[in-house]
Image 1 (cartoon, rainbow, N blue to C red):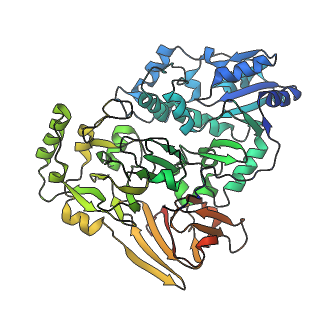
Image 2: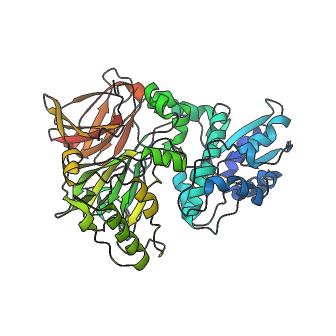
Length: 566
């Protein structure tokens, strides 16, 4: 196993004053002699913020007392939260104004909490208040939900299972907070980072906006986060330099901007802030026109090296995800094998002449009785080796087997996995994980059987071009999917162009590469093995070549971008 040089905390240098610790932060804000409006994203530990200001002799008003009753909010959000254990519907029309009581206008000196900017706006003359935004990335919110530390908007749901808390955030709260944040981005006077509650940090709004501008015009990485899984493996412990005492790591979200954070200097903020603030620079006009302010490409790792099979699963078709959950595109995906043990396999597509009723009956019997489901009677099991690429258009039954290190390249709606069979095991909480045979039965594409799978989605690799010290291959995705992937092998410089849309790449071979601008539009950017990095659409032309110890050796990248038909 190679020595790790994977960077777990990628950041950009950012000039501008940084205030650290509550005493420095509050001293700076008090010196401005203005009323303080501290708008908080869901998941911020509001009580700790209030205690810090009160400890400095300030009287603080908590906005949560002006929310509608919990019963009213539960009734209002129930059509979107639903009774399902995992899935709801996207509450795209709800706004923060819907959660607070009418005719409440505050003029206190310090107001803290969600909706602070709304409750104070009518009663505070312009120029007499400072807007402070306490931000929070979703990966950290999820950790706090698991520890039962935070409530939903207007609802104390800390005793609910983390999956239900996440569901409320995904379908309701985060949409509501993001909609308000978008309205405030240009008005924020100070950004407050309370990701580490014992060491809060603050920078001015102008400094952060400048940092987002810089980031939107150069290569960058988001901050990855790692999670254990019932099927988790051991590969990432070495390659990504993780805690060896942990039982396993199954997941790495290496590029999921709606979940990940970015580091601007020492400030840790949601990566979505960049998507919202400089959408066109980042995504490009054609991608923005199609996906709005959603970052449509997701790269993550699934580690089963020394672990077990993933759940047998299927993703919804576009029609089904729209009609059932209010999402306008689905999770098409692929498995790229960064590494594999001897004998590794991928389950993909149905065997020839499978009887749908028989298979669904067998899945239901396994679920109801605990009897094993004979997956290999119904599902193809393909041998898998390093650098294989398996394409998984929505509706295709699939899962990675044990012994594989998967780079999953997919569209973004990450919550919509219909598990059909979980090999009789329990989740990390000791409970059976949710099985969704009913949903799955509505979306399985029964014609995707052995011959079709072999001809269309197993290592469908096509040479595209070659030059001095490099060659390019098309590895997917399937024509039903909107993501295109191109693999480059090289010992010398490779020329790339964003083509007007965001590019996402991963280093699939080579210890170290350098990304450069032929016109010196950005500073050279160094990336390492297994790291995922983003090239904003506005960058245009860029090059990649081996660097450092990798010079003269064959290296490889895989690039994903949104495909547009001419």
